[in-house]
Length: 126
Image (cartoon, rainbow, N blue to C red; front, side, top):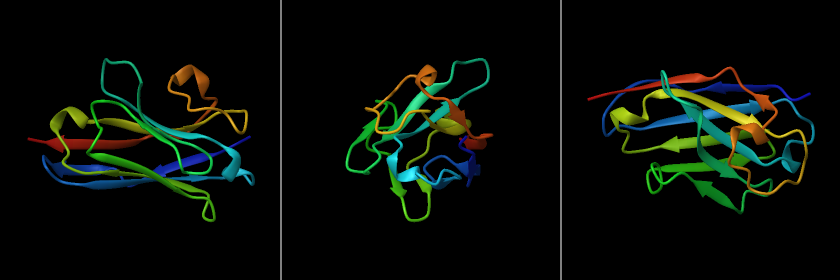
């Protein structure tokens, strides 16, 4: 069982920045691909970014490419999402997620992930 706890959300003006953190309880955190998803009201949960267990490979949704950066610190069991140049359309609840299996490929579908955090609200005002 893996427990994930997100933090760092809040209210920011368009063009601003936020840094989300996700702390994981897994003792083998360094062996898991990790992902960030987001869900706006009335919409599906969409992929934002994925990072491989080594941290060397990343994937970004087209909508955030060039503005968001995913990273991880395996010594701290934490994955981060640096969000710059925020837009009102980035407003959503952001979730971090982990699969049940270790050493997986870059998974981009929500159904591929088994463990989820409680989510953190990001609101971008225009």
